[in-house]
Length: 185
Image (tube, rainbow, N blue to C red):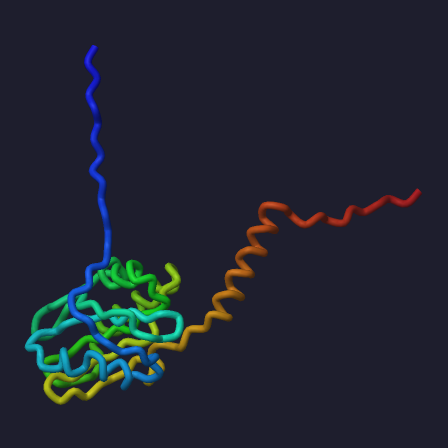
């Protein structure tokens, strides 16, 4: 009897650096983030979505162009947005995209995508710190965080939520003993 070998393809995932965006100062404001990529994407003739991957201190580790779309939209999934963040071991991200029309007003799609990315990020522990829109040619910017469309995240809030989940799980696995009523004689 002949035996056939079954081969499995070995896959390797790695981050490849293309060009260095040098900046060692932490991002404290939307303007800090705009200084890094704003001039780069403001003159594009189509929408481009970029991600800045930040370490725990808010220092940019790298930037990734996630999607290049048409003159009025770009489409991307959480998988594509968080891929470089995961490979970079990022603590948080800042989304930046341009509007070639020059308007920085968020579209309905911008609002929905931001909410979806914020929820996905919270689930995997990589937080969306801001989403910034750059107006074409003018370089004017709009920050979702400054307009309170993204609330600042808090590691202490997350730690408290995790503690509650652990306590609930512990109670489920090992229920608290109920006091038994003893009958008097």
